[in-house]
Structures are given as C-alpha cells and as structure tokens.
Image (cartoon, rainbow, N blue to C red; front, side, top):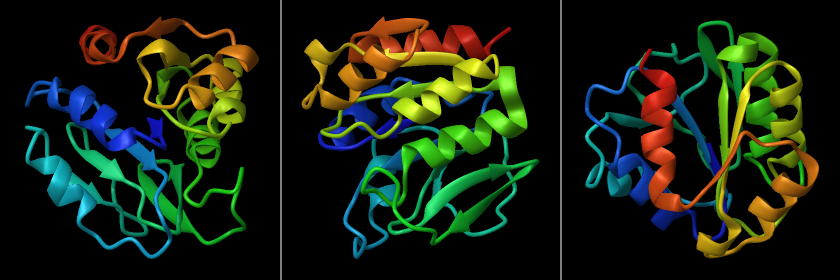
Length: 180
C-alpha cells in the first residue's frame, strides 16, 4: 500500500475499516520527511485494531500485522521477511512505493495486492505495473476522492488496474480478496 500527500487521513480510513482478524500482512510506504520521528505507528494505532509496527531489518512477515516503512529507508519484501535499504531515492522518495511493490511482486507474484492512494508524484506506477505483470492485483484510489490526485492518476494512466475505488470502498475490497 502506498500513499503520499494526504496519506495519513487515507490510511486512517482504510486501515481503520479492517477487522481485527484480517488474515494478510500489510506493508505500507507513506512518504514522509527523512528526519521524521517514530510516532506514525502510534498515531495510526489509535484508529486501527490490527497491530502496527515500523519495520526493522529482517523482521519476519506475519499475517494480520501492518508494517510501515521507516523514514529514509526503502522497504523491500524478501521470502518470509523484510529488508531495509539506503539505496538512492526512487521518484525522489525513500522509502519508495515502487521499490516495495517491485520486490513484493518478485517474491510473491500473484499473491500480492497493490494499493495506490493519494499523493503528489508518480511513485507507485512502475511498481504497480510490475506487480500486474507478475499476476498481482492492482487497486487505485479514485482520484476524485484523493486529497492529491496526481499519484492515483499516474497509476491509472500507466497500469491496467483491477479496481478504481473511492477511499471508503478499498477496505471492503481488501477483505473480500483476502478472505477465501
């Protein structure tokens, strides 16, 4: 899941609508300043029933957890765990949504659902494209419901997405997709 400008409100809405027994792990890149402190998980936890943590290198991926990329680190998915990287920014961002989606697509292919929400740049489009090419599912927030429509519009323009949804319909879609 990737967000940027306006993302805190969007994350609060989507994550706050997920049940406490949601079965899949969720990895999130929220663009933020590289010197941001570690209060984002605590802020979001007030509204979310699933446990939230900021990822540390080599954290094991557990179902039912929400994982946030730490400020100034790329978050990568590897088989069974996460890794962090200080490689150059991608689309002017570190963490980058593209990096998260591309690494998840390489490891988990068709099991990955990518969600691009509000933001003011084009990060996420390239990663969502790779995710789709590897059999994954692409969901994009309806730009008309985004605080900043640039990122959702860029994703829609570059990827044949599965769903374009208003913000309040993203969580119900994830629940349907992740509950067989």
